[in-house]
Image (cartoon, rainbow, N blue to C red; front, side, top):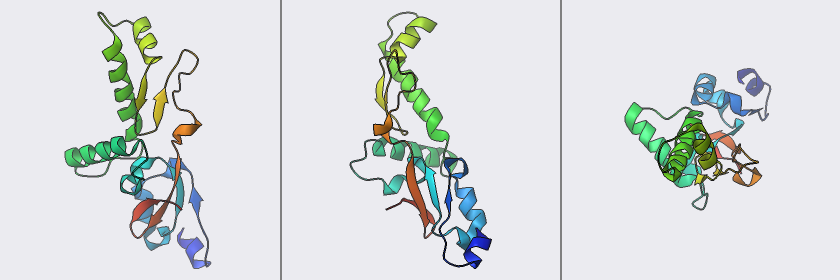
Length: 149
């Protein structure tokens, strides 16, 4: 990034595998304006008020920050959502939990997580569809990630 900024005006785009605050901290001022396809957790404060995952993402961000004294890593939301999904499934099970009734319960889960709206079924074990838009375009502006225009 530093070399690119010396070459003049250019925009740099990176994928979600590089989505972290470490990247821009190490890049210094060369990271200004960097675009990254990522998850919403890096920019919870810039989420639209009507984004259905905003409350979940803000809760995850603030709880993690309070407990560990630093913002959560970008991939923390995957395990957070897994716990939300498991919790919703377990609430449906009456009696002993078995592999089969847990699977059956997960296939009925409909929950909003920080990655999007999970709707599982017998034919969809991924749970997210395109309408969830789990990836968003972010831009590093003045020391923080923001949803890109």
